[in-house]
Image 1: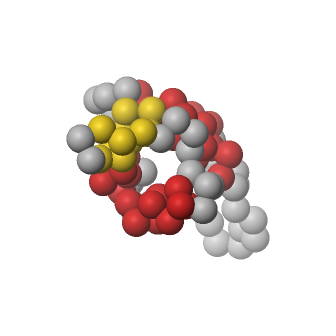
Image 2: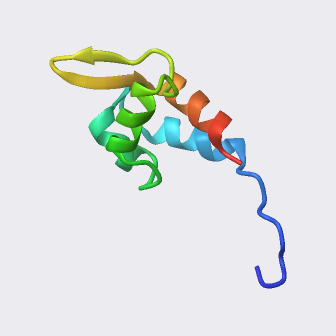
Length: 81
């Protein structure tokens, strides 16, 4: 908006919508870009995980890192401003 000097906080509903539209209870790290609408890259998640700053519940199956959607959305909600 022109003249608007502040950024509105992100509505919690957007995070609920993301989770509701995702077809699985998990999100693989290589699909993070799609899950977040392009906001977060898989490499960024790998870096955050290596720093201990990623979502709780991360696991590896068949060589792919994944997160429970509920945990990922909670983590993303906490990081949103």
